[in-house]
Length: 382
Ligand SMILES: Nc1ncnc2c1ncn2[C@@H]1O[C@H](COP(=O)(O)OP(=O)(O)OP(=O)(O)O)[C@@H](O)[C@H]1O
Image 1 (cartoon, rainbow, N blue to C red):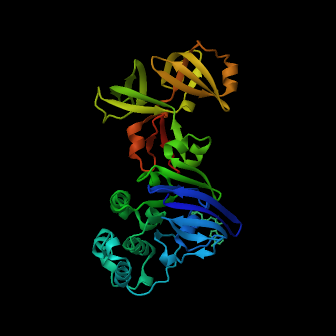
Image 2 (image 1 turned 90 degrees about the vertical axis):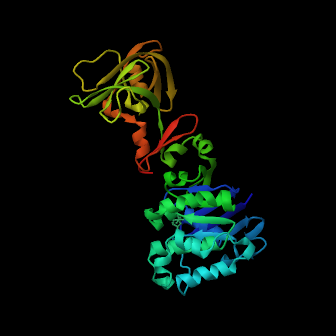
Image 3 (image 1 turned 180 degrees about the vertical axis):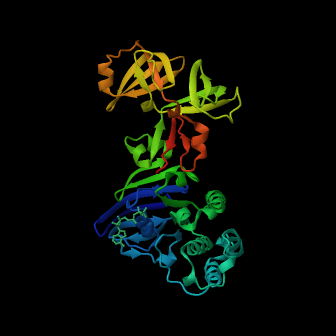
């Protein structure tokens, strides 16, 4: 393991009690605001000291309360771009970069100052005193200094948010390359799963100062109750559809999915005959025993109930309509309608409850992820 830590720290009313191991893969540290992400990174970087426990990195002890070892921050083989970091630096940006470069052993140097100056566009303020930089500039300089140190682990605390989205596109590819080409993994703390998933699907989930789960997104997502915390919603029905027509007066595009006729939101840019995919949440499908006249719902799809599956405080009705649709209803509705397996029902779906997957993908922070066992999407608020 690259990093092993098991520490306790009380900060005001907040208790952090974290045990975790990191191998040399890029990892996302996910948690809601106040979960303790910055605190945890500060403990690894050495800006904070635990009350008890131990931290070791690449076989070196950074902290051990029993042995009385506290490695000073400057000596830790850690690069860190933290949110609240009064670096206490003086001199110009240029001086600071040069000093970081000089301090790194020649054979360990991964980057040159010139390369990072170009990459992070530091040339505009190279000769400015560091204390006059605005926060976004300071973060870029801190990142450059951290990389010049050629650390064993790079800690980033919500750096995309702090550094500004303009640098996101430059930074993402380099963050991805650090691990593969330079053997330098990144531990990236964020409240945004979308941001983390931009460059890794390995997660450590922090809740109330404790590591609640860790592993790949796929492993983590299997655990009860975690999807909501992560801001992921399951997309219950994914259907391939063929576009048949665009009805401008009705405001819908007509489509076919395995023989099911569907009215979708109007999207004339899809060519007639083209194929795309739509998603329908199971909770957006209502069931009726009869075809209903005089209702605004445009999709009434006839089918047969193949299974009624109790699921928490819901019942999932699996309806065979040619293809299978999953509808989520309450146990009360199921009882009132006296639904039985084998019954004929109509699945009622509003046109605007049908979402084109291509559009989910196109909206930033609202992406579809496929775990192999189903499709999920990241909630926009995430
Ligand atoms: N300087 C401090 N003094 C006392 N308590 C603090 C201090 N900084 C943070 N805390 C406490 O530690 C808790 C965790 O804070 P921390 O900044 O580590 O959370 P976070 O997950 O990084 O949140 P965010 O995503 O909002 O940055 C906070 O809720 C707060 O109660």
